[in-house]
Length: 134
Image 1 (tube, rainbow, N blue to C red):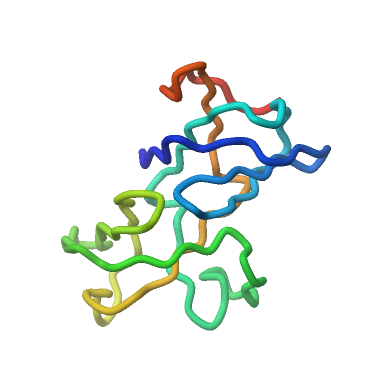
Image 2: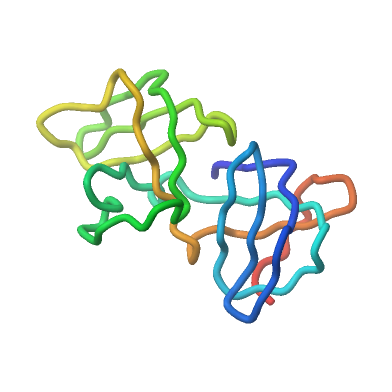
Protein backbone atom coordinates (compact mmCIF):
# COMPACT_ATOMS: atom_id res chain seq x y z
CA UNK A 1 0.00 0.00 0.00
CA UNK A 2 1.28 3.44 -0.94
CA UNK A 3 0.60 6.11 1.69
CA UNK A 4 0.26 9.76 0.72
CA UNK A 5 0.75 11.65 3.96
CA UNK A 6 0.10 15.21 5.09
CA UNK A 7 -2.89 15.78 2.84
CA UNK A 8 -5.54 18.38 3.59
CA UNK A 9 -9.16 18.52 2.46
CA UNK A 10 -9.57 21.72 0.40
CA UNK A 11 -13.08 21.12 -0.97
CA UNK A 12 -15.97 18.77 -0.30
CA UNK A 13 -19.09 18.08 -2.37
CA UNK A 14 -21.46 15.11 -2.87
CA UNK A 15 -19.18 13.62 -5.53
CA UNK A 16 -16.12 13.48 -3.26
CA UNK A 17 -13.24 15.45 -1.83
CA UNK A 18 -10.47 17.57 -3.24
CA UNK A 19 -7.26 16.99 -1.32
CA UNK A 20 -3.98 18.88 -1.54
CA UNK A 21 -0.84 16.89 -0.77
CA UNK A 22 2.74 17.49 -1.84
CA UNK A 23 1.69 20.46 -3.95
CA UNK A 24 -0.69 18.25 -5.97
CA UNK A 25 -4.48 18.34 -6.02
CA UNK A 26 -6.23 14.98 -5.95
CA UNK A 27 -9.90 14.13 -6.26
CA UNK A 28 -11.42 11.19 -4.33
CA UNK A 29 -14.60 9.23 -4.81
CA UNK A 30 -17.68 9.89 -2.66
CA UNK A 31 -16.73 10.76 0.91
CA UNK A 32 -17.42 13.45 3.50
CA UNK A 33 -14.83 15.24 5.56
CA UNK A 34 -14.77 18.87 6.71
CA UNK A 35 -12.58 21.30 4.77
CA UNK A 36 -9.24 21.63 6.57
CA UNK A 37 -9.21 18.04 7.84
CA UNK A 38 -5.78 16.41 7.71
CA UNK A 39 -5.80 13.12 5.82
CA UNK A 40 -3.53 10.34 4.70
CA UNK A 41 -4.47 8.64 1.44
CA UNK A 42 -3.73 5.05 0.53
CA UNK A 43 -3.61 3.44 -2.91
CA UNK A 44 -2.51 -0.03 -3.99
CA UNK A 45 0.36 -0.40 -6.49
CA UNK A 46 -1.97 -2.25 -8.89
CA UNK A 47 -4.38 0.72 -8.95
CA UNK A 48 -1.85 3.31 -10.19
CA UNK A 49 -1.44 3.54 -13.97
CA UNK A 50 1.27 4.99 -16.18
CA UNK A 51 -0.35 7.73 -18.26
CA UNK A 52 0.90 8.27 -21.78
CA UNK A 53 -1.33 9.91 -24.41
CA UNK A 54 -4.28 8.65 -22.39
CA UNK A 55 -4.96 8.06 -18.72
CA UNK A 56 -3.48 4.56 -18.74
CA UNK A 57 -6.85 2.93 -19.26
CA UNK A 58 -7.44 3.86 -22.90
CA UNK A 59 -9.45 6.97 -22.06
CA UNK A 60 -8.08 10.45 -22.93
CA UNK A 61 -6.54 12.02 -19.85
CA UNK A 62 -8.29 15.11 -18.53
CA UNK A 63 -5.93 17.91 -17.54
CA UNK A 64 -5.10 17.55 -13.86
CA UNK A 65 -7.30 14.47 -13.41
CA UNK A 66 -5.24 12.94 -10.58
CA UNK A 67 -2.12 12.96 -12.74
CA UNK A 68 1.24 13.21 -10.99
CA UNK A 69 4.68 13.48 -12.60
CA UNK A 70 7.63 11.58 -11.27
CA UNK A 71 11.04 10.08 -11.92
CA UNK A 72 11.56 6.30 -11.99
CA UNK A 73 13.95 5.18 -9.24
CA UNK A 74 14.11 1.46 -10.00
CA UNK A 75 12.06 -1.47 -11.24
CA UNK A 76 11.92 -5.21 -10.60
CA UNK A 77 10.72 -7.86 -13.00
CA UNK A 78 8.33 -10.27 -11.25
CA UNK A 79 7.58 -12.65 -14.11
CA UNK A 80 4.11 -11.51 -15.10
CA UNK A 81 4.59 -7.90 -14.09
CA UNK A 82 7.03 -5.14 -13.15
CA UNK A 83 7.18 -3.40 -9.80
CA UNK A 84 8.33 0.21 -10.30
CA UNK A 85 9.30 2.78 -7.67
CA UNK A 86 8.69 6.36 -8.80
CA UNK A 87 9.73 9.50 -6.88
CA UNK A 88 6.89 12.07 -7.03
CA UNK A 89 5.91 15.25 -5.16
CA UNK A 90 3.59 12.94 -3.15
CA UNK A 91 6.54 10.80 -2.09
CA UNK A 92 7.93 7.51 -3.35
CA UNK A 93 5.13 5.53 -5.01
CA UNK A 94 5.22 1.85 -5.96
CA UNK A 95 3.44 0.94 -9.20
CA UNK A 96 2.73 -2.56 -10.54
CA UNK A 97 2.42 -2.79 -14.33
CA UNK A 98 1.95 -5.74 -16.67
CA UNK A 99 5.14 -7.21 -18.12
CA UNK A 100 5.65 -5.74 -21.57
CA UNK A 101 8.44 -5.34 -24.05
CA UNK A 102 10.28 -2.85 -21.83
CA UNK A 103 10.06 -1.28 -18.40
CA UNK A 104 9.92 2.45 -17.76
CA UNK A 105 13.42 3.13 -16.44
CA UNK A 106 14.28 6.81 -16.93
CA UNK A 107 13.00 10.25 -17.79
CA UNK A 108 9.83 11.79 -16.44
CA UNK A 109 6.66 9.73 -16.24
CA UNK A 110 3.06 10.60 -15.43
CA UNK A 111 1.01 8.49 -13.08
CA UNK A 112 -2.77 8.37 -12.83
CA UNK A 113 -4.30 7.75 -9.41
CA UNK A 114 -7.99 6.89 -10.01
CA UNK A 115 -10.26 8.82 -7.62
CA UNK A 116 -12.35 5.74 -6.84
CA UNK A 117 -9.22 3.81 -5.76
CA UNK A 118 -7.95 6.34 -3.20
CA UNK A 119 -8.56 5.17 0.37
CA UNK A 120 -9.10 8.03 2.84
CA UNK A 121 -7.64 7.75 6.35
CA UNK A 122 -8.12 10.54 8.86
CA UNK A 123 -6.65 11.44 12.23
CA UNK A 124 -5.70 14.51 14.18
CA UNK A 125 -1.96 13.96 13.73
CA UNK A 126 -1.97 12.91 10.06
CA UNK A 127 -1.37 9.24 10.87
CA UNK A 128 -3.70 6.59 9.40
CA UNK A 129 -6.75 5.73 11.46
CA UNK A 130 -8.39 3.43 8.91
CA UNK A 131 -11.60 5.14 7.85
CA UNK A 132 -12.90 4.91 4.30
CA UNK A 133 -15.94 6.17 2.48
CA UNK A 134 -18.63 8.51 3.82
